[in-house]
Length: 74
Image 1 (cartoon, rainbow, N blue to C red):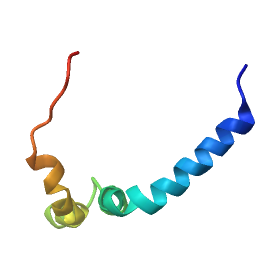
Image 2: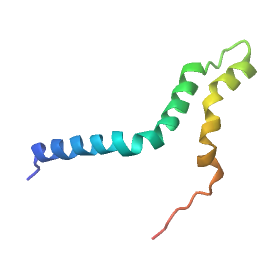
Image 3: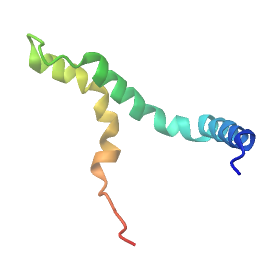
Image 4: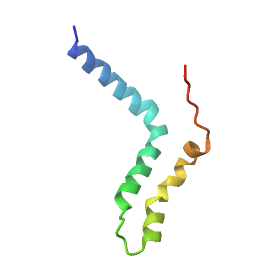
């Protein structure tokens, strides 16, 4: 049987550990996405400037884009 109380306990612990240990290493990714979403306007009269501003935080994502992706098939 599914234990909802136990699930809530596990999720609370996960969130606590995530905030303490993972968030500092992951925050920049979310900030880059937020920057893009806040600045993207396909109808902007100055498309080049809008694109530059939208991708301003993307420079922080270089470590994701620079490393090769590895997918395991087994």
